[in-house]
Every structure is written in C-alpha cells, then in structure tokens.
Length: 283
Image (cartoon, rainbow, N blue to C red; front, side, top):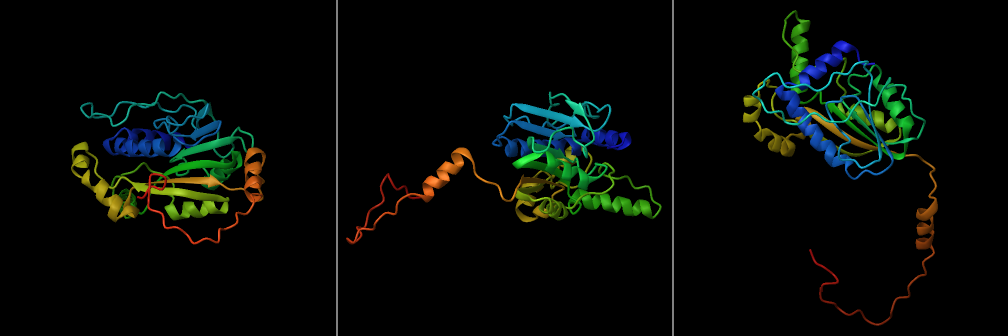
C-alpha cells in the first residue's frame, strides 16, 4: 500500500508545471492505446488525476486506489498558468490493496497501471496479481518514470548529493525505486506477457517553471527521433498469453473451413501479362 506522505508528494508534484506536462503526454498516449481495445471489464489502479479509460468503450470500468482518502485533483500553484488537462470526472469506485485485488481470476480485460508499480508496496506481487485477474489475451498498460532519462538522471544526482550531506532537492516525487524499462520487460516475460508496444516521452530538461519548459518544447520532436531512451517516462502495452489455448465457436469453424478448402488446379496455359487496373491498386 502506498503510504500517505508518498501519495501526497506525488499529488502535489502533479500540480506543478512539469507534472502537468507529464500528465498531458501520458493522457494522450493512453487515449491512443486503449481506444481500440474491446472487452467487458476495464480497471485502472491508482492515480485518479489521470483518466486512462476515457476513450475506451468497455461497458464496465473501475478506478481503484490503495489509499484511504485519495486527494482530488486541485488547481496548480501558479494561478496564471493554464492547466494542460482538465480534472477527470471519473469517481473512485473502490479502495483495495493492489497486491490483493477483489476480483475473480481471469475476469478483467484491461488493466491500466499509471506509475502504480513504482509506488507499490511490492511491485512484483502487484504485477502478478494483475496477471491473475486478466483474461487470456487481456491487456495491461503501464506508465513509469525512466531512470535513464533526463529526469531520472537529475533525480539520481540529487540523491547522491543528499548522501554526501547536501540538501539538494529531489526533482521527482520520492519513491523507493524507479523501475528500468528493460527490467520491467523481463518481469512481464516471466509472467507470460508479450509486449506489443513501447514508447518513451517527455524529453524536456528537468526544469520547474512553465516558461522554461515551453522554451525547450522543440526537444520533444527531436528526442523522439534521435535519442528516445532519454525520455523521462515510458509506456508499455502487453498482452497476456496462455499456452495450450483452443479455438472455440466461430473462430474454430473458420479455421477448419480454411484448412478444408479444396486445392485449385493450375492452368497449363501460358500466363497472360496483366496491366494494373482499379481491381489491383498500385501504391
């Protein structure tokens, strides 16, 4: 369970200019990823400030938190600054421990984890619990800070200075450990997940003011092209694979029909060269 001080620091940081910049990128990435995922049940664990299911069309959706009183999205400290996204209207549906979800096995089609593993009491157990509740071929969408990104390096430098007796402030909300992108892929592979796609984002330097962040807006396009691994946040979409599954119903009948299709005898006449037409479009 996420303790209250860590939760409060995370909520307060998300109201700052870099926090709003991060939420805007993550909201756009989730909107693109979940819009075409179909099923019946979708679940988001944590971070009510981000509505990761707003473009998804599954009929049953839940937002769960592991804190007794989750802080609602507030106005940014700078009243003159225009927030990049509006507060999501979705209400918290339940409070539970993320490593003991109150759902039957194989009952959820989609799970969204926005920075959930970084602040979880046991990230391995939380991810294993997500695998338990997901149906075969169910999806999990994960967002996390990149320790090798520009913000992660700034965070590590601040911790080194603190270890030497300094009082350097940390740039990101303090968390036990930032999970590396490739380490997370290994965890997913051990749980029989297959990564369908990944993306890095937020390439602007570790700055705190909105005007300075705006000055470096050009780095988003350049970084995505030339140094993607330096993105300060990453996104992963993985699907749960189950070995030994059998096709049933319509899918099985279609497969049998294709296998039973009669062979077509080839004509012995010489082939006629055919010019491209509207029936055979050419790129």
